[in-house]
Amino acid sequence: MTSTALRSRAWKLLEMVTTPLLPSDYLDLVSPLRAGADLRGHIEAVHPETGDAATIVIRPGRGWRGHTAGQYVRIGVDVDGVRLWRAYSITSPTNRQDGRVTITVKAIPDGKVSNHLVRRATPGTLIQLDQATGDFVLPQAKPTKVLYLTAGSGITPVMGMLRDIEFDDVVMVHCAPQPQDVIFRNELHDLVADKKLRLTEVHTAIDGMLDIARLDELVPDWAERETWACGPAGLLDAAEEHWSEHGVQERLHTERFRPSIVVAGDGGAVTFSATGRTVDADGATPLLDIGEEAGVLMPSGCRMGICFGCITPLKAGAVRDLRTGEITEAEPGVLIQTCVSAAAGPCDIER
Ligand SMILES: Cc1cc2nc3c(=O)[nH]c(=O)nc-3n(C[C@H](O)[C@H](O)[C@H](O)COP(=O)(O)OP(=O)(O)OC[C@H]3O[C@@H](n4cnc5c(N)ncnc54)[C@H](O)[C@@H]3O)c2cc1C
Image (cartoon, rainbow, N blue to C red; front, side, top):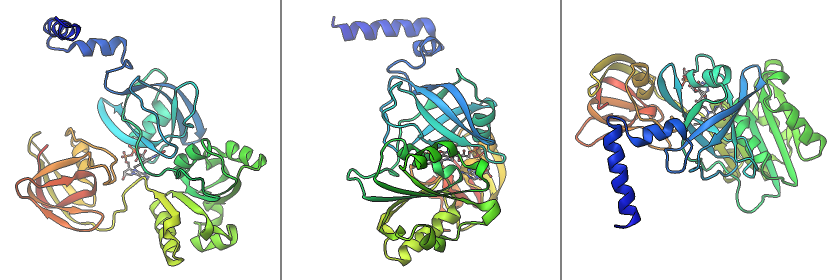
């Protein structure tokens, strides 16, 4: 008998002994980060950055394949007994010697996962991990002039880039309510002191929101710069319009943390037939949120309509795509993205 066949027979025997659990469930208790296990990570430290943001240091398990600067990782965290998945940009450089990675999270009002990570996560906590992904990354060929345009927690993927690759000519315009809200402020100012970065901070609680037209004054050659922008929808929408008006849209790369919701309508009663639950939903809240809130086990991914990790059969009724307003009606085989679809009247979701 070959060694593979022997191993498989031994494993089957073990399965009989450990039923109803699997042998891997026991291995998870002693070695959750081992090769071959579902990808997980241990939180090893939590470092406060500002009053409402913290950097979480994670040791990924053996299967971690690394990342490219600017990418994000999805993590699954148990909050009050419910596993919730969210995406976070990786803020550590790709060549970190100790094999650990960091994410930096800003707690938002009523945010389940962000508040849990910033205020309650403790070293030793086991979390679920996906491989890093995303195309908000730097090109192979180094651009000669770079502009980073960021606001709030939108600084995170850019910090991953700044820590990874040096450019000859980098300008950053960063918006935050007040100086003490600027995440990584000391590190940014160190880069400025070392002449590795030119930085303009816009303090929106004092100066008001950044009017994108001010770029002419803040960064006169902005249109010549390869630009990476990340922040709230208002800033990114304005930037996309501005770059397009000047015919340089191909120089602008954006990363959004939330989908732009443009069309809301009337909601309806949503039935999750597999779970046997029916709840009222408005016409603006994604069905993913409605399901999670109702305690239904919902698959999820990027939560902004990119990855298709949340697709679910629509059994009856109609839903509205919150990005386009398009209505999808139930018919056999029709799948919907629950993270960007809301009820458009009564509907039945097969979960
Ligand atoms: C590609 C990608 C990268 C991301 N990187 C980071 C990062 O590096 N750091 C970081 O802090 N966050 C990042 N996010 C956002 C993060 O995934 C979560 O959306 C955020 O932490 C809120 O989750 P929550 O569970 O706390 O809020 P929820 O409990 O899901 O939501 C609570 C309330 O806040 C609203 N809300 C949800 N998300 C946001 C948001 N981003 N801004 C404002 N209001 C919101 C909801 O509509 C709801 O009303 C990223 C998102 C994506 C898609």
